[in-house]
Image (cartoon, rainbow, N blue to C red; front, side, top):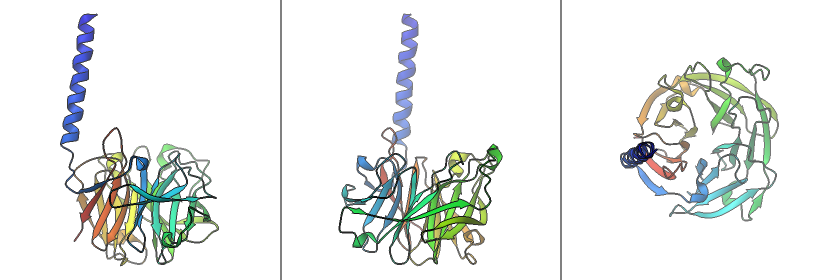
Length: 291
């Protein structure tokens, strides 16, 4: 019994050492801010037209958007009274500054209540509550009765606004994993819609965690698009029409794997990303210059 206890103790010490070494060697060179623990499941970020940063939390949290101050604390929160947070996954905004919240996390690929909430420009929100326009949608090419693993590419964690429409990027859960994210488009107004497929892009084949798309953003000048994964960012430029994947693509290696689910542009050449806090790892904002 004593020998067994000693082995368990030794293994525990080894695991602690490995964890501490892993944490020590994480690349935090681009970190510029830690965020409040109340944003421990941060899943979307966006700057308003006055340069204020806003964030949302993932599934099971409140139906609030939170303004983050220069210290990473919550400056104020606005509740969306007619919304649910089934699985909030991303934030984007239109040319007038209206915010869109994507409640479309779809891990099992079986949701029939995919929703986008549209609210007014946060600059104009003086009260602590507001109501949203509600956009309901489905995928034009999805058969909800087909649950085979090979077609499970209808999870969503990323979208953006571009030229009057919303563009959705799937998080691929196919088995065997084929590495593609699919691009869909839909209108930006309250209605029941069917998202239409535009194109697809093969992220990688290394494994699903490295290849999953967990966030999307477009620059203020609408010339650069970025997709986020757990350890890299894909940058697209010079695309044709509204198929971003027809453009030139480059990659930024983030140097570490954490649960990154939020990305936005601070300006035309600077990206900001956020990761969730998982057992003391993450819970930060990072800046990356792309020019």
